[in-house]
Amino acid sequence: MTGDPSFRDLLEVAMDAALSAGAIALKHFEDGVTPEKKEDGTPVSIADRAAERELRRIIGKAFPSHAILGEEEGETAGDEKYRWILDPIDGTKTFVQGVPLWGVLVAVEVRGDPSVGVVHLPALGETIAAARGEGATRDEWPCHVSLTPRVEDAVLVTTSPRQMRRDAPGYAALADRAQIERGWSDCYAYGLVASGRADIAVDAKLKPWDLAAFVPIVEEAGGRITDWRG
Image (cartoon, rainbow, N blue to C red; front, side):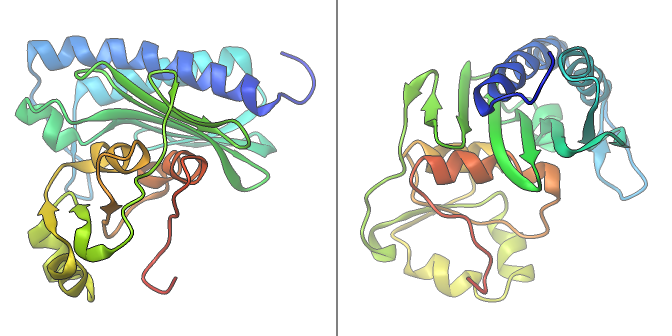
């Protein structure tokens, strides 16, 4: 592809990459995998590495000059205007446990702004995506955050309530105000918020590949992503 791609162009490639990588990861999920530990103590599996290679293959074919940052293979330098941010399996612990709430995350930063995002949940057959100015979709139908007016009426989700209460000052007060607190996992939680099935998702210690795809998704769905300082 020559010239500057539109957000729609980027989204189409991101969707193709996420679906193809998700199919590879799903085969490993159904067969079962044994994880290894990375230097930081987090798990990685053959499925993570195979899925990221597929993401990079498809993106590289369409946009060979673009920069790429992936959780498993690190940073590949390229055109400073475009950087792809990849998490081949968000929720590897969930994945190896045999729980279907994991996903493939693909984001594109355009001049430093997360402008395109895709979360594909292969084991659930669900895909949520967005591009700036295009709105957000769930399985190609428009989706929107909930209209719940008060925290006291809200469903709050987080990957680990125990970790959040230990590591995130302020979380307990927020969770105790919410009507319901649930531990629905990893990327699944943010997909629930973007599609109006939960009201608040909170996590701590996120890396760029954990969050980048959800900035355009949640914002295009009418929501807001922020830190504790607002």
